[in-house]
Length: 251
Ligand SMILES: Nc1ncnc2c1ncn2[C@@H]1O[C@H](COP(=O)(O)OP(=O)(O)OP(=O)(O)O)[C@@H](O)[C@H]1O
Ligand SMILES: [Mg+2]
Image 1: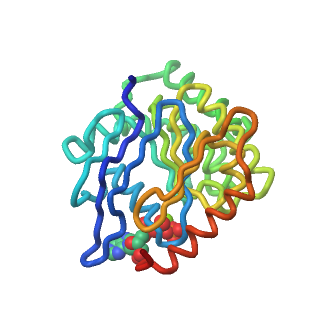
Image 2: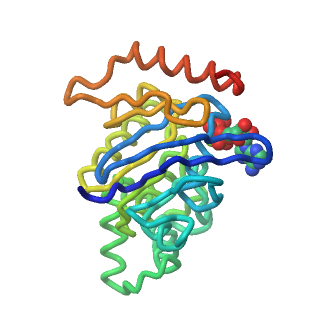
């Protein structure tokens, strides 16, 4: 069996006396799109932070492409790209300049024409309008910024992409373009793990949807071929998860 792109086994995370994740088990295969849903405060960002190595679980293990995040956080982070809800890139630089800068920061030794070709290929892959490539990010919309952040992931050729609420604040057109982009990335072999409140968007693109409730995955559903999901069933489960999140002590 190939190593999963990401895997959490028996993970517990507590902030002081408050346990947020308890016995979390999660596995995302290479080339799979996984959407994690859960109410506010359910622990979705905490889960991302554990995979990013920003916090150390009290128990259990977190692995990225087989690398134990606690043992080697830098190597683990080298395998993934993280796109936060509000993308942080340089406003006074263009899309091309931002990618060039961050690729060098990530240790790329590409130069000249090779670097240019890498950047152009990535920007084409995310379908950013070529007219915008050399414009400063200061004038970009949220959807355009997100494309630049994802283009950086494409250029780095990392096998795993982590996204926190990627479609919040995108209009329907941008959301639909974004979903197409995720499918393109999957076709390139990337695994994608996204935290979202957009149930319908998740049902459109994800191979599996997990519901985070009371600190662990309470339900996990898989898209079966072209049939996709029973959306009414998903709504019922999601409403259940959000209600439970509002009552963290509920058994
Ligand atoms: N650094 C921290 N210190 C203490 N408590 C924290 C910290 N970070 C998160 N929490 C608490 O942990 C719980 C889970 O937070 P988290 O941010 O993971 O939720 P979330 O599912 O991402 O929510 P949202 O949908 O609002 O983004 C919340 O009760 C939150 O208040
Ligand atoms: Mg969050």
